[in-house]
Amino acid sequence: MPSTVKVGLSNQLPYAFLDDKGELTGQSPDVLRAALAGSGVTNFEPTVAEFSALIPGLLAKRFDVIATGLFIRPKRCEVIAYGNIDSTSRESMIVKKGNPLGIHSLEDVKKNPDIRMALLRGGVEESYADAAGVPKSQWVTLPDTTTLLAAVQGGRADVGFNTLVINYSTFEKMPDSGLEFVENFVDPVVDGKPAIDYAAMGFRQEDVALREAYNAGLAKLLASGELGAINKKYGLPEALSPTPSTPTPEELCKG
Image 1 (cartoon, one colour):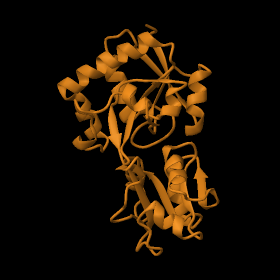
Image 2: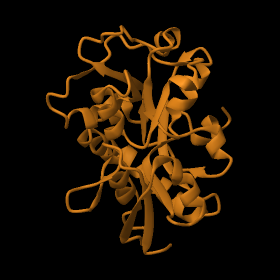
Image 3: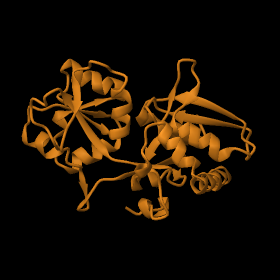
Image 4: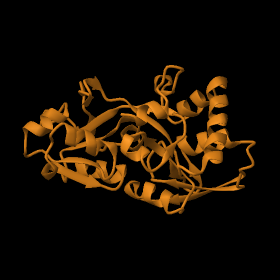
């Protein structure tokens, strides 16, 4: 087991970010550190990259693990291996106060070709928008959540479509923003069910020992309640922590 693990992240509150001192922090790094405690890993070196560059960077060995709230997707499973699930998530939309265009769903966006929707480049929201039939001509793809919300605030986009926890964490730091969460938001539907996403660490497929050491530590965190405490610290309620009935990465990778 290496003593130093290089960590790839995209600045996404609350999952992973660099604090004011440039220190690696967030839900995912805290889970990673706690799970690998006692494994021989003593140093975690952060590398910040645009979200869409994380998997290519992992494969190119720029870092050893992706720790940034990476959702499990069958296509991603073809090239990387996931650790066990550490949290779940759902989607959200943010608009200007009063929701002037009456947006509550992807279907509303699709029905009005004048609506411009901001979403993260390379994020799972692209697949949801595509599946819902929202034309790419209405997409405003951006590199991070701060830019996404600023686009809605400044009128570059009419709605910001992004993960609830990420949107909320950034939104909290924007007092008097003139924005609000869409009330009565309708979740995207996948295979007839509301979309629920499952986040996990991403590893290279050949790094079996590192992944197994992480999974063993994660199981202890889950059993002790420490995982739930870490998640709660970063604004993820208990309902977003995994349970014994949560699907495994192997099950989710099958689609």
